[in-house]
Length: 183
Image (cartoon, rainbow, N blue to C red):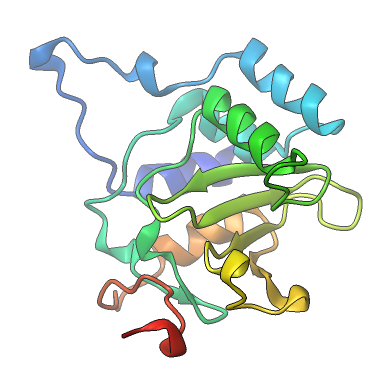
C-alpha cells in the first residue's frame, strides 16, 4: 500500500516549496498525534494511504497540476486546490457533523473544501470505509435531492489520486453549479 501511494504522490505536480523564503515541507505535514485525534473523533482508523499522504505530503497544493480538472461521476474536481491538514480536517468535520450545520454523516471526515463550501469527504464507517465523496454547497438551497447529495468519486484515496495522475485530457475548470442555478 505504501509503495502505491508514494508512487502516486511522486507523479503529482505539487506546488514548489519556497525554501529561499524559509518555507519548509514540515508546515504542510500532519503529526501522528494530529492523525490519532482524527481517528478518535471518527471512531475508526484512517486508511493507510491517506495517513501516509498526510505524514509525507500533507496539505501541499497541487493547484498547478491541470490534471485535477477531471470530471468523475459528473463532478468536476476543479475546486480542489489541496487536501486539508489533520487540524483543519478535524475542525471542519466537527463543524459539519454538529447540530447547527449537519452536512456529513457520522464517521465521515472533511478532507478538503472550497471557498464556496463544496466538500470532499472520506467515509470511515463499515459501509463507506475509505470511500471518497463530494458534497455540494448547493444542497442547502435545494439543488440536490437527499439521495444524491453525496456523490461517490472513488473507492479509495489511491483510486482518486490515480484518476488525477492518469488524466491525460484535462478539462476546462468547472465549478459544479447546476444549470438551473446559473443566471
